[in-house]
Image (cartoon, rainbow, N blue to C red):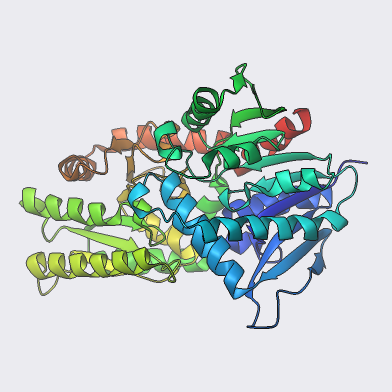
Length: 457
């Protein structure tokens, strides 16, 4: 009998609605279903004041068990909003200026990881294989090891790993590095992330690396890149769903022959949205032929509203959108449309199809699946053009996009102008190359290659 897979993540995703959630949720649910697995993590609920977080709540659906814990308000503040999202998130995205070095946050982060490990440990079987996800849970395996766990445990980091000099700004960096070594397999999105991690471990902490395995703190871990993909064929089909068709038709009718540029991101300072607005403004200023002929749609659902930096960027973007529309707009033309709400993946597919240019310009990103979804949604006979930041992990795979420096607004504006007038044959060739890679390295390939490597680790 095959070993059971146990997935551990900060938040347990929707098992019943995985297809609607898409992306990672689909990949993990498929893997869990094959192995009759268990998915463990936070329930997403905050326990009422004075009630305590309670115990593990279990649910079963089509061979998959979910086991979740509630967090107290204090745990959520220190572990999630605090160390995870006010310290590790900005630091790993090279925003040292926004990193909060609060010892209370770090202690809360450690406590929640211990509590999670203590809650999962009684549910484990001897031959379980564990797959732990993302920066919220770096110390998780170490805690399990201290409790006597001898399971095979893998870790995957869904955000970038920064350069050595940036990591050194973290007061607890060596302690966190030791936690990494409790895993048997460490997975990253790109080879550059692997190189930066190995450089830090070898040159700062004296680890040994043989090209495959890292040795440090008395342990050995395999280190590899596993670029995550999407289900490109399924996403392309979303265009023809009811929501996809409706959005495609609505957008096409409203555009009246104009070119739509689209950006889709969580509202986050790592996504480069202010710089993107500035580049669009530069396009209108430097290329008068774009005025009245181009519209920019930015979809940016709100996120982490309890963190001050997110309120600040929202205000900044609202001001920029108002200024651009005030300066360049006409009675029958609004240059920039800025939406702060969630749009379903099927509806997004329709919006992508209606957009002749996809603008994906993060200042730093682990992978960025929006770039891949935009390409998948295009009409192969008349595809749009992807303008992509060199600092997105996806740029390492998507060489046929127009690769730009998101900090250089003139370069981005020039790329947008190039995309507007790109000949059909060139657009088709670029799209075909991008789609070939998306299909060959889809989310199923990512999941299977990682689990195969974990089995061999």
